[in-house]
Structure formats: C-alpha cells, structure tokens
Length: 155
Image 1 (cartoon, rainbow, N blue to C red):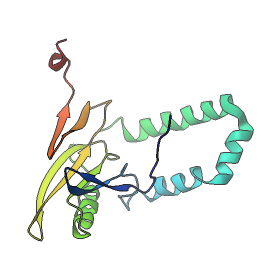
Image 2 (cartoon, rainbow, N blue to C red; image 1 turned 60 degrees about the vertical axis):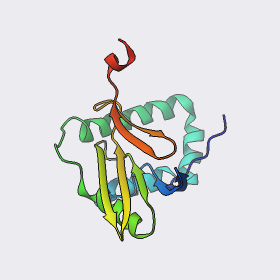
Image 3 (cartoon, rainbow, N blue to C red; image 1 turned 180 degrees about the horizontal axis):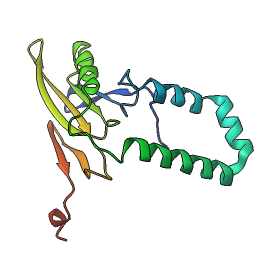
C-alpha cells in the first residue's frame, strides 16, 4: 500500500479551491509538551531504538503511552473547542487558502468566514470515538460535517 504522509500538512485543490489539510497537532502553540514529545518520537534515533527493542516491547510501550494520553486528554470534556485551531485557520486564510481542514482537537467544528472578500471555510473533523464525526466532500464544492448515525445506514 502506497501512502504519502505530510507531517506538516499539505496544500490540495478541492473543488477548485486552495485547501490546507493537516492533522492539526502542530497548529496549537499551547501544546508545547505534545510538540516536544512529537519531535522526540519522530526522529531517526528513536526509530533505531524502536527497531532494537523489537515489535513486542515497542507495542507494549506504545499502548501504555496511548492509554496515558487517553486518560489525560479524553476522560474529561470541555464544551468549547480550543480557539487556537480557528486562529491557525485564520492565519492560513490570510496566506490565501480558502479551506482549512484539521482534526487534532477532537471537536467537530465548522466555521465560515469572509476574509478579504473571499468565503473561507474551516473544518475540524472531530473524532470517531466520542463524536463519531467526519467530513464529507461531494465535488465540485459541497462540504458536510456529519455525525455517523446507525439509523442513517438502515440499522
């Protein structure tokens, strides 16, 4: 399976519009601890250590770190999305992007703004575990932030 990964995000054309797509984990400057951890985790020396540790030990460590992260960030919920993601989208709009799509905050969010006379759209796809949210793009230019409902699928 060939997959291209863009750790810093990527520019795409969606419906003839200039779009910026990213996981969003680098868009919130207040998450400096996470960003430091990410830099440590995603470097060649760490990859060598993981290879030396082998798959069983690496998997156990990864599962433990994942559980700690889940307990810290997903057991209590705020009712408002972090404002840093909209601020990041606004900066991208000023760079000329018309659409910004992120995810990392886990808050489904859709914002329409007019920047320099242009309609600009920001989406945060949210998450699957809590909100069961996703973004549907129907060419040429229809975006829908939706939540999965079993009844929608006839269940």
